[in-house]
Length: 251
Image (cartoon, rainbow, N blue to C red; front, side, top):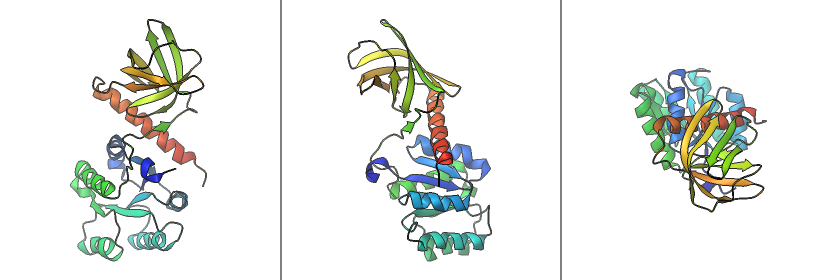
């Protein structure tokens, strides 16, 4: 896969509980494929598996600062992980500590002071991610959910009522498989398409873009008319789906 097109995976190791949910929501909504990790040993395996990834490390938790320094130096020196780009998250504002990570270890994603608050910390993080071209050429994150029985779509049109299984979803639209579907031309506007996403419900107008294969149809949301709550339901489902993927990935 062309990494410049798909973007980089963003890992946050040992995120502070007070910022985790809001931070992840903001990163996902900004188009960055983000995950949280709580096992620093497993993180090394994932960095080796995805050598073009980025990881922000919370050095306030999990190990002592000296242990974190050794851990980070190990990532930089290991041929399997040294291409990964690292950044620090911490409430510690000690200038010597910051200088070590920024100047001596030269971490490309910086040292983010969490005492600035979630919004400001996220703004700085987003700047680091943009500088490291973490989004790639894609505009939206696409989450693959064919194996999730709780991701479905219901469509009512003049031609009838149709029930489909969502195969993948982004903030812009879905691909879904139907046993049967109406013979509608591309660019048909469908009103109040209902998405069921693991207990979350979204109603949105959508435009039928066409058929892909094997009764798989592509729809684009009318995002200009979608309310903020429904957008958040979609983003949080994407976040859940991504996290489930990384949590169940072997290695």
